[in-house]
Amino acid sequence: MSNSMRLIVDPPTFQPSPYGLLTVVDPRPSTDPHWQMGVTYVDTCGGMGVTLDACTTSAPGITGTGSIPAKAATTTRSFWGATPFTVFAEVDCSPVDFYERREEVMRQALNRFETFQVERTFWTGLAPERNNSGGQANGVFPHLAANAATVEGVSSGNIGPAITLQQAATVPTGAALNVVDALGALEAALATCLNGTGTIHVPQALAPTLALLLTKQGNRLITPNGNTIAIGAGYPGTSPSGTAPALGTAWMYATGPVFMYRGEPDMYLLDGAAPVNRSINTVKAIIERTYLLGYDCCLFAQLVNTASFIATSTGTP
Image 1 (cartoon, one colour):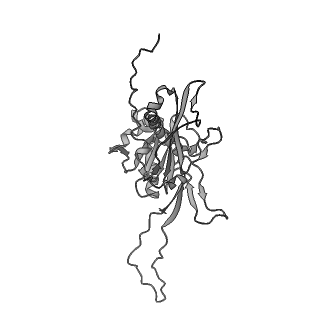
Image 2 (cartoon, rainbow, N blue to C red; image 1 turned 30 degrees about the vertical axis):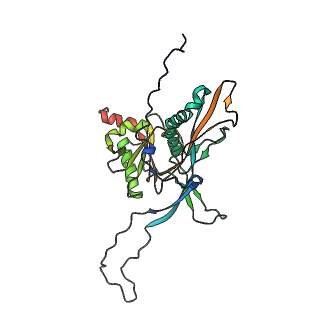
Image 3 (cartoon, rainbow, N blue to C red; image 1 turned 180 degrees about the vertical axis):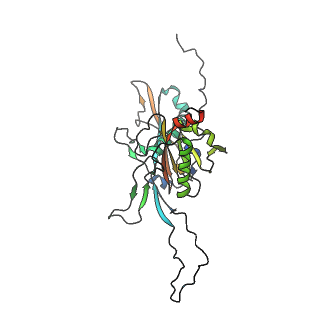
């Protein structure tokens, strides 16, 4: 039966995930395009400080020696770096009505897929080669699933401070924990490292087991300690070494606050002056946007056993 007489209507309205990574980041102005070459930022990370007795129990001697303790540095001034990556959507469709609606169609395509791509790259650190040649994916820094540090500027031929592009994730507890204890372990680690609000990164598969522990604050989810929650559809739940978790488990990560630079979308037709593939009568177009995300001081990872939480919450022995 022919469908030529069917009424053409709009598709269902697409709604992005309400609590994904892009809802918790600190967006930065992108007016200076040089961020697309990467950025370096300086921060103060380190210990929690020291408290000294203001009055000593015995006076110092004439020579200046005595019981007054010496003060020492409690934090470090550290240098951090972040590198950009580009997400894109490609549309191959009939040119009959595409040229009139191409901007609308392409923006819809980017809106549907860019958050997932950003989350996947931020978790794994992988971005495919731009020419789709099938070569090895390029590393994006910093990211979450990492078991080794990447430091720039420490070789003999470089001048300047060491810049940390990537931390190695610290695992608070090696065993898989139920989601309550896992969240507690990550928040305790953040409290020691950051002494402020950070971000907990959660795969969507763990969201139902976390629901009772979170509260909504504006358009964000927060923990009892005030840390923000990013529940990412693009978060694969893999370990710091990049391995997939066993059935019934997933990894969560915790970082310091996350900032973001984001460019404007760029749209263009492929294949230069001949964008139409006449063998199949389609036009090939692409829309892309460049991102850069960074965090500092803290990176923790914890394995979660979702089965143990379900058994405990339902009273199953």
